[in-house]
Image 1 (tube, rainbow, N blue to C red):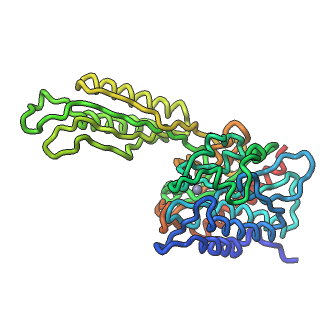
Image 2 (cartoon, protein in one colour):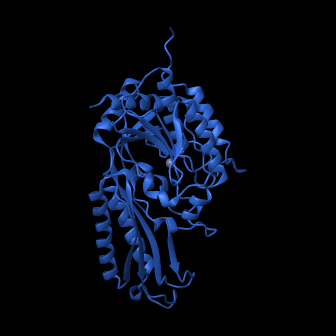
Image 3 (cartoon, protein in one colour):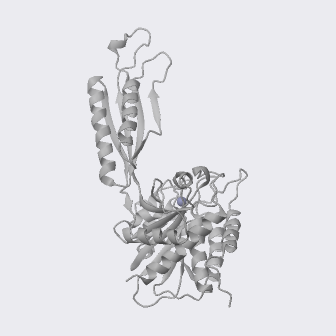
Length: 411
Ligand SMILES: [Zn+2]
């Protein structure tokens, strides 16, 4: 008898194409936001793929779509997933690839008559991107049991709350607690890299070491808005010059650590006049590392330097914390399994942290997490130009397939 292939790449790419049509925009991207008709339609499509793969299909209380293999008593579940919502004018790989690869792996296992000891669940998480409500990872928070009643009060731009959206779509927010998944052995996800590391290393796939957690800070420096012509240089309290020194130093500090990043993405100047010395400057810092101690050290050093500059230049300094998310370290054992499987398909073994956030970070301290990255062309993502090749996708699917087999046989 002819041996079946490990992965049916044609089926997987067809599914990617079919799903990409749902929510297609005039600009060539995809709009698929949570609790919309487009998202519902995409989920119904996924249901078909899941059923064909032999999975039984259900939605949990907030609308996560879950496909399950038959349950053997007692053994914990191997959970595999990602999300199918997009950013505005997003693309077909971010998220969708992870859900479809998971379904493909289970479909292929079935075709190859391989029965696993552990039950498998594929999950399409609700709203990872946070596009609609400005609050991401709604589905994975619910699965982690950390989504609160307070969270559900957040509203979209039309004033519809998450709670209302849940109920409008036929789910039941009163059963929120039932969405928490217990008895999970591990969580696995395939996702596009959204950066250029794998491309630069000539590698199709990568093993993720961890997901960096951001600290978002808002800095305000206040000085004196005075006449640009009439105020001598040695008598100024120029908030922008102070801010510039701090921002330049933050770059130097972050560069001292291999995986730390610090970014100023927003800046505003008051009064913002050509002939007025800037009296007040407000800007944000996004600081990340996979190591929480290093991230906090970078943050501390930037703050200390800022205090010094403020004192030297007679400026007022105010620092507001906007957000603080703990980084996640991917499980060491799962990383070894993934790297082994990458070696087996004769690909270079590259380990890399994820600078972007993913659903897996919600499972910190709950169960082990592993992630496989697929090379992104030019590192582009959240953009219609996003692209990962069929060959790379096939390799990632094979790595997931083999990893699941290995994890299933682990004690
Ligand atoms: Zn994503």
